[in-house]
Length: 136
Length: 391
Image (cartoon, rainbow over all chains, first blue to last red; front, side, top):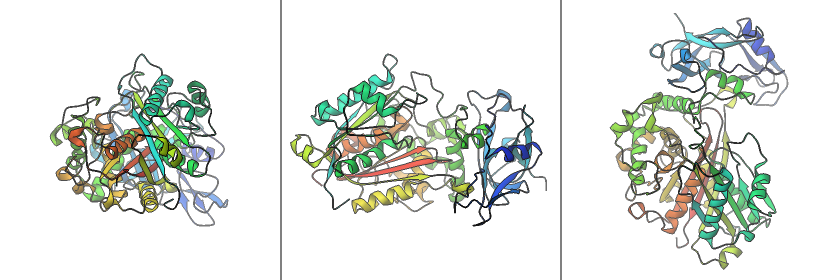
């Protein structure tokens, strides 16, 4: 899976740590110290209780496919990256995260166990988490 | 709301064009506004409130300012609430509130756009990163149709809904479209036609998707005072509800939409139940959009939408819940990639007896529901319950 010229993330002060951790092959989620919610995407205030006692937590990087769809044509997308599997992966920590499944369309289904991989970007400050079927 | 003064839809107009290469989008707004004024029997000077969700083709533009300028409107109230395709249904609710507040008497709502003439890659094109969420979605090639495909996939997984059941929705819409001379696709299709059409984003086929068309529509919502001076038959706004659905911080449920809240609010306000509805306009960006809305609005239990739509339930005039009798977004028109406006217009036609003869339902109570944005990420839901004059 190549990346450029796919759109790269815009990194801001709330999300910089998430992307730099990904560059170090670590998947982070956020956890609220007040209400215990583990959530994604990263935000400084807990979207449940609005508390600010929010920490980063290292995710195991494993999860289950919640749903997926295969796109065969997409204007503005590199031909070699098609077909493209867009999926929600439910992390073992709880949150459902939108991502790509980097495998053949026939290799996954809802419920398939998957694990994270990181696709490097041109910039070394960030990498993009995608998922592949877990070999168990 | 039930104890407050009645408010009416007095004018409704849908632009007949489906392709407008020689017009500007603002011109289309003006043409639908003129059409609605003529329908109501009102002059432009009567308008004292204006609602639009703007022109999606422009990056920004302060919609009420540029459009009030273009149309030459002097208004005491302007609203540009943008819930995507559900906007225009929420505008009806907002207009009712503003009229009851005494802020205005005649609210104009317009929608227009030219995605077809502009060759816009709708629903299946990579899009620019603009919001914080985009960095976690669009980098993965999240498109509208991909997100709705995921919703359909999950619905099928949880409830054993089939592609053939989803196809029934297109079949019913196409049955209606054959009687609409303006519909973009007028040929009736079969379940087999739908499921054998090209897969665009699993499990959605080409014929599970709405059309890409130019066009627009306009509504005039008026106070009791204004209505009493009009000769035209009007439609009463009995109830309105809206809601925003989103990721829930990572707990998104792709099988449920904010129609659960918008629908129950609209029914509560109207003092009515889903079983009271004689005709339903339901936003149909994709077949799955309709299926989930039918469940969430309470026309059947969650998960039973697939069996509910089988057997001609949605076909006018004799189905149990005739829907989208103009052919809907799936077959007739999806101006500016936003379908809420046409949903209200066809509901008004049904209640006034102005629908095409072959699909005219004997309707006293109609519902119009919009789903805007994407049910796979963030979406708006807006519902109105409308009543005919002689109900």
